[in-house]
Image 1: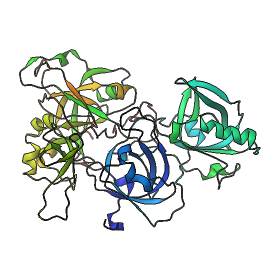
Image 2: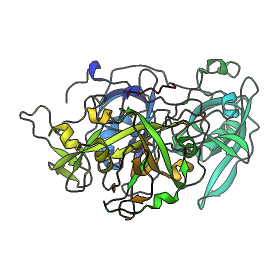
Image 3: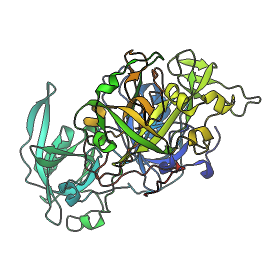
Image 4: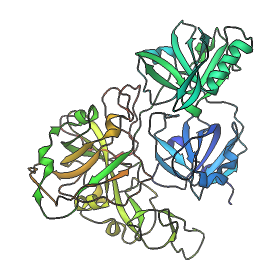
Length: 514
């Protein structure tokens, strides 16, 4: 394998989903095995950081364990080459990065000579936790003096007896936060208190901890095995540890999504006419699952994502990975299909557009797959690529028909789903699209919409398109919300300190009133 050179290395903040041939240089901050009920075994999880301190979550299926042996050494620097990038989401996000890394069958991990001892700690102040300004879906680093330590309890959790310890953390400003630890974390603190005979002023450093609200009280708890705990960590003193706390800045990100579309061309009574009209803000703030219609304008293209992908013809266009050896002349394109579990050559490009929409109340994002995007764009991906089988190199280099969507207004049939209501996702599944002035009383045949879980932006842009979304890249989970309302976030908690600005938004059309 070729030696990794500095000019090939990308900083983690710049890693995007539009390709899989990234090279990063990272330090392993933490690794653990996550229990899973899915076939294939428990995946390995990692928290990685680059030299700038940007952190990212990395996951590896059991099948690819041999490829990450060198990552299972905390504190070591490594090069990682060739991996997929997908949206980060969920209620236990160990980093504020919008995306996460997934190890694939093409990933290589090699040693790095870089030596930086920094653990890239990002301590959160107690005042920020107490005032509710943080998004509880992001895990935090917190340090405090352990006081009021209670007795060890043994409670049933999912039919298993689990140890539980409750105490209080306090800082040098006498802010206090309840803390509840489980399992080995509870045992660690209890040993330090009862057996270790430590000074009662001992400090607890809890990394990647979860903010919870229990019986109306804010508390800190371990996030299963994602968290780490250290008693009296080196470099900290009870009297002065707080002054080293940096300003906490949790980034908002995005989410995963589904796209749904009915199929057919025959028009029948449109059931969408039965659903209410809503604004973008309404669906962002929704507290109940529903279907509705939103009228909004496409104001930009999200070029964090490629505008097309290659799909396997045999398995109905499941996304394939390019495994072509670039040093072979002439180049014969070869692909690997996860669905077929083999190399394939019969592939075709398909549109996959990520669009940003807005109305007078807010902004959000949606993704359009081939069958619904093509009628809007007017041309297929195959025509736009003129037969090319090359993957996206510059995601900002978009064909004019796609750029031409900017500034157009449509009506969108929106699914406000469980992921929106329970997990705070602002990426909404679109069931149909209509021209802005169309009266929604008819639609294509009334076949049941097929819903496909996909990373989608939350807006769709089409004049008239009713199509079924069948096979698509279900490795893509979602992208970030762009709503400008206060406390916007991709998971269920509505409070947050910051929002991700969509990088690389092109051709933003300004309204006269802006």
